[in-house]
Length: 106
Image (tube, rainbow, N blue to C red; front, side):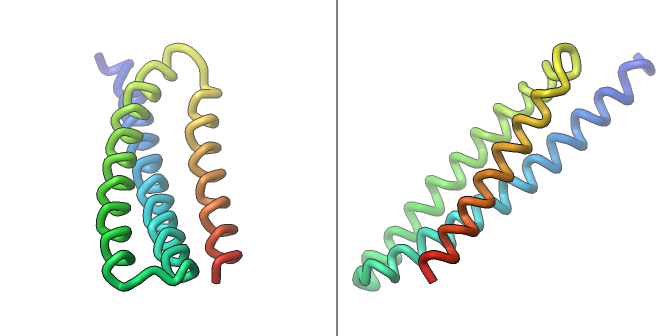
């Protein structure tokens, strides 16, 4: 049991950092959504509805991602370390896309 302890600690550290980075991505995507509603000149009522529904949708996407990455990190310790790079690479790519979209919309 003590031999597995470092692997479990690494798994949870990766899971927490991945969840934090995904949360940052979700916040940036929400900003892009709000910028898009302003750019399209939607009415204030529509902007608020898009913000609220978008926040709920992005929050659910974040929750599903965190739960899926937990299982992915659990099996990555036994199979391949490249899975960790795939998760963080996808998150960083989404973050880059969100920053580029924000820059183009503002």
